[in-house]
Length: 178
Image 1 (cartoon, rainbow, N blue to C red):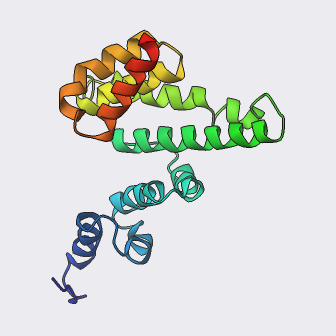
Image 2: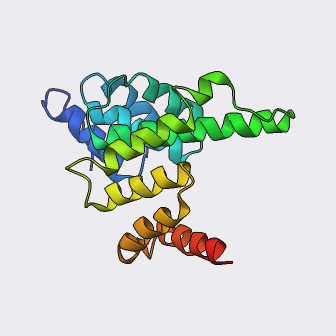
């Protein structure tokens, strides 16, 4: 399908959706100019960066989201925060340091990510959804409440058993049961 009518008021939306439906094809060309007009363009660009392992660019885009307005924004902010804290921890461990830097411990740290996951997981709109339960599992993982991780993941295992999430649940239960 070719979309070329720039006079069409839905032209940008169609281009955005084509990127999404084509699993990120042309994301770097199409999404950046659309971020001011289509809020989901920023989120989909963050997802594109995450899928391609560019956590720094994903983090940089999410730092521009000062007050998340949707569960998706909270979740993405939490995910990129965890990835950046993990990268910083690995970097410091590589150089022999044993503590996280102050900025990672505070606003950009794992504690902040845990709070974001908890906000989504306990929110009225997400509490009994798969993503809400995944958020609560993530929250409990970050706060080292592993028994609760299993409870939350077990409650959604039938819905994610054919995905990587199902594999994570299986491997986690195996590790805990050893």
